Image 1 (cartoon, rainbow, N blue to C red):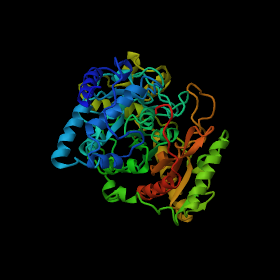
Image 2: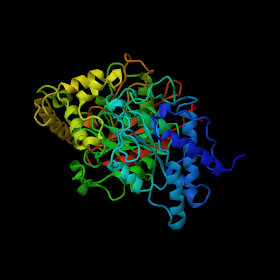
Image 3: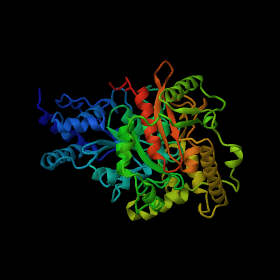
Image 4: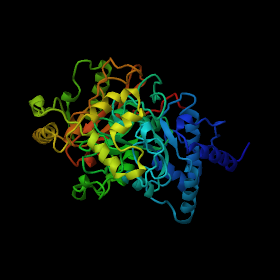
Length: 527
């Protein structure tokens, strides 16, 4: 049997050929063997990985090789999750460097050798960044997005770039022109991952990487996380930087972590949160960022907490009865841990508060074209019209691109956008007033009102509950696994939603629920 060194050389040879092409075109001649190690990466945590390093049961090289082995076995073969666009051909070389540094002086940082899956709308200076579009194929930016730079400085390895709904357009599915076929839900291969961060969610859920980075404009971290039994954090607007992320809507875009546990999500969040001079919206974080969000990952937060059930977020026609049952059990679990449940908790005259006149507001054209223009001649395209003329887009996004191209007024001047901003101010005040009047620590609701839809199903209810409250107010929300529907097979998530800058409190509540219920389980399609 070949020794681990020989296996690693085989992996390097195979991966060197992968870096020049999208993963869909990558067909290794053989599946690499997992290196010898008593350590199993399936469902492992950051803390467990670091403990294994300290006890010399694991090296960074072997950890990365094990994840590369799983990618080779499961992403385009076997169940063919189809979550990844590009694999980092230098991942093992980076791992070797980290092993040498560890031997010399200990861990580089709090994310030392954590293999990370990064959504392909984050700029990476050594890997192509496509936003799911063939129009950006082959584009390698000149620098990393702020999030990517920060996790690398903390010791993380960018293992792969993940598929997304093209241009991050849809919350319902993950399909793009850069990667043929849909990304599949590893819990049921005929079901959607949701979008737009479905590739990150599927890969992390299937244990193709340790943790991941996604983005969320209306749903895109929380929705895919819930559909894949993950934890996803959408922060207060201004606590986390979007610099170096291909924009969809600068007024609502958020970048954040996706992980299998609350502790792992918070470990990443601690590294990435905070002021960034390249994103002026983060200036308030100087006064609001907690010193260490990891200190909230401890038992007892639910004892004495007042939690409201936000029925306005999820009660609608088509609400799935199994989701209602699972959510009811989740609320009962909160109460059993000492929380006081306020049910219902809601905003008076919600429809009136959230009504925005003045016409539509579609900032995508101006946000994207300003972003691309700032990238200079290195960007393959600079306007939406160029994308349309090239024909390099998936058919499902053609109408969205055409609608965006027709916009002729920048968002700062558009009456519809001004009206929407005024509505958001009213809505924020209404949410805070309601929570204050009921003395609430948080609000909860099912992240989806329905289970993941079948791939291709555009008719049955999707049940997206994430669009209104967090994106419109800019207030934080965290989704956590709350159970399963359809004979205990399809994941469902519960969202904790709170006041601005209340991430610490929400983390504590989410962790308390997670530890009381332990709903996360690995998908059977990727053993």
